[in-house]
Image 1 (cartoon, one colour):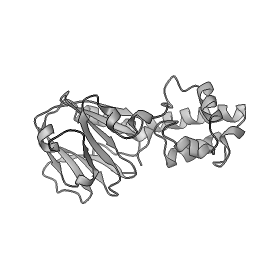
Image 2 (cartoon, rainbow, N blue to C red):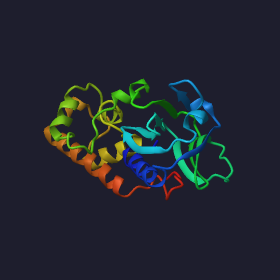
Image 3 (cartoon, rainbow, N blue to C red):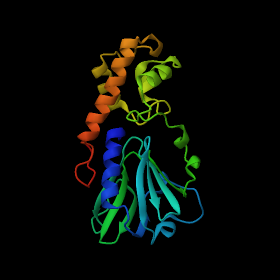
Image 4 (cartoon, rainbow, N blue to C red):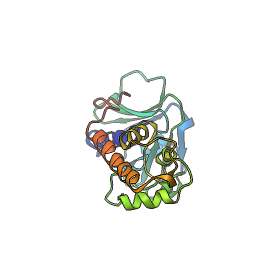
Length: 229
């Protein structure tokens, strides 16, 4: 699944490439991933509207549509975006596509069909499952060693399970959890309450360091096409 550094890169690409562009058409090829929080169809609701700000909230990507709607994507295990020419053949994993002026598509692909694409009224994000239960952003100023220590004290599970709990710490998955624990010199099955002050300090430094380094050198997307690493 795309994790925090990958999602940051995706948002930066979308902000440069599609924010401000008008949607000429939208296509739904695989409706199993789509959740509409208002009456109508995705093509009718989006047609003619510009994409606004693109931003991240934990593991969710939010694309504002014409000031009227929020398009919220939870990529889950295998969801990804691709920017390509509108004339290119549809991929087998294509779920939803948005065609822009200039003959370019933004496509959401999902081989596992586990991700979800929500279209809700602007600001109505609480209707998206899990959106309001995202944990602290690990690269934010609020994520201090003291805050991490307090979070760990409330846990009865193992440190790897803690890192993967998106309601505790935002947007960390399997790949970066393993890198973080390696950097912190902690066994994945170490109990959260068994961590020493020194352990917590190393873990905090590893979380910040691994994610910041990965965000600075993204590999999940290559160029605008969004090929998986």
